[in-house]
Length: 307
Picture 1 (cartoon, helix red, strand yellow):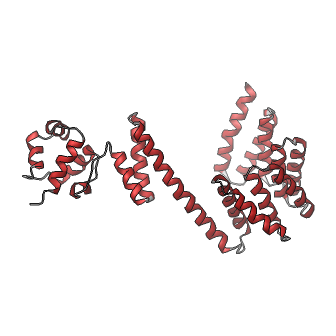
Picture 2 (tube, helix red, strand yellow):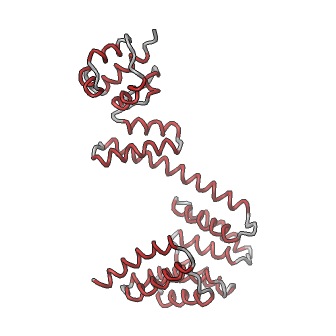
Picture 3 (cartoon, helix red, strand yellow):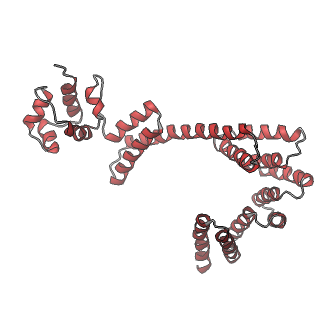
């Protein structure tokens, strides 16, 4: 008779430092029953297997493997599964188990270390997946949907700056612009690439060149105004944001830039007034979710006025 199952039952129990009596008490069976399982005299009812697996911090499949090992807890077992497969569903399972442990306050230093590694692996997966999806959009070209194409390029550049590859975005867009691009979005991408990389001086320098070439491109003035704010050129920043709104009064990004500027300057009354205007416009346009999110920010601003 195959003894892998019974041998594993005994091994897992011993690795958990449990006596047959202790395991029996937890499983609500007799110590004699546990002994008979481990001696391969009888087998547990199939409905008992999930309960036994949970007690020994293994999966049911582990009972039938000759090289299976027990773990300190079930979360660690699921973490090892994810480390081997790198499948998102296995990450979700392990993440859920670690969250339960943290909520109960039972995480050891090793648990936290493994949980961190879990997220490190998933982060890399998400980064690679994001780049792949962004590239698919970009490779399709504009295809009559310029807005999606350019928004995707911006998002990829932002991601590159977050993972230490911002210079690649700068080099790529700089080459396009220096070849004499007549597409204002290429210039905006270059300014954005510098901004995402934290080089506000270069962003400002190229912004000034861009507005001479494309004086009626609203988005340029938003990026230029944001760069000016970072550089402490506050009057210029306000002037450029206002210019963006003169060109396109529906460009909420310019309003948000002004709102955050006024909040940073401590002028909460002006900021709150602008919040109300933006929320009203979003509501009229049917963007209820966005309006609700801004409502929370507006209330936080109002609280500061009351202080």
